[in-house]
Image 1 (tube, one colour):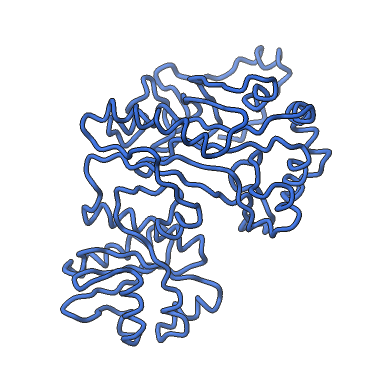
Image 2: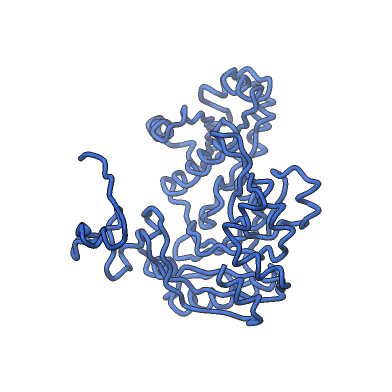
Amino acid sequence: MFKQLIMVAGFDRYFQIAPCFRDEDSRADRSPGEFYQLDFEMSFVTQDDVFATIEPVIAGVFEEFAAGRGVTKPPFPRIAYDEAMLRYGSDKPDLRNPIEIHDVTEAFRGSGFGIFARAIEGGAVVRAVPAPGAGARPRSFFDKMNEWARGTGAAGLGYIVFADGEAKGPIAKNLDAERVGQIKAAAGLKDGDAVFFACDAAKGAARLAGAARTRLGEELDLLAKDEFRFCWIVDYPMYERDEETGKIEFSHNPFSMPQGGLEALESQDPLTIKAFQYDIVCNGVELSSGAIRNHLPEVMYKAFAIAGYAQEEVEARFSGLLSALKFGAPPHGGSAPGIDRIVMLLANEPNIREIVTFPMNQKAEDLMMRAPAEVPAERLKELHLRLDLPPE
């Protein structure tokens, strides 16, 4: 919001190496609570202008410190969100991995493989994850992949092995030759390959297929060595449906400009509306999110109304930003690549804690400094706070 207010105030270019503090869980690529980013915002720009501004910076940094490793040359490839979820099962695809996921739902629809056929009638899809050269692997390889899938909460991973000129495995026995041929052609398979299947609702199938793609890339040693592969993920959905409540909610950034503007919000199914939102990804790690911002109050009111927020609530929560936008704001957008993650990739470290000088643990505790510490009662009294802690 402050970046947007700077644009409204007439400073049409802003950048800063900024410390950031967020209440977030710890992950391998995320420090709990604190990180640094190369933050920038610009007025009177399109998405293409943002990309053209940051790509030479990112590519230049990596080329300077890559120590001979390959770096994607600008312009970086752009992949629509829906395409990324279909082809890679993730909006953070590692492009060093050559495996691409394929939709083979129709090959199983009405087939003799009843488990998948019945699921498809109920709205499920089937995704095929090729395993190049895995046809010669022992049965234990496929059993371990199946056990791994069950360990993630899935029902399992079916598979077909193409070897000695024929299709083998439990699924192949329940499919006629024509359907097996459709799968083989759709997934670009040849003799000596194998293919695994994820069958679920679209989101669940993408999640399992994407994880299987990553695991197979590692197990089969398929990842390109000494490479930094960049891409942009674009055209994020503006909204999504909450699986538990069934309500429409924002999927990424509520302050982004919807593609099509107010007309799209008033005439389209909300779940079909895309936003001018984008992520830059390197080797499966998101370096930055960004967007062309929503600078029109009437569009903001409508966007929030679709997600269930009354105009009075929007004004109460975001009065500072809305008041500024009502004076007239230029179109503006930006991004903020994470410096810690850039260093983590360049240092070839799998965990961001390895490149942070004084890292906290996964509970956001500094064990050396014994922080956070218990707050004395007199400090709480000064702030008119009373603790109601659960029993230990």
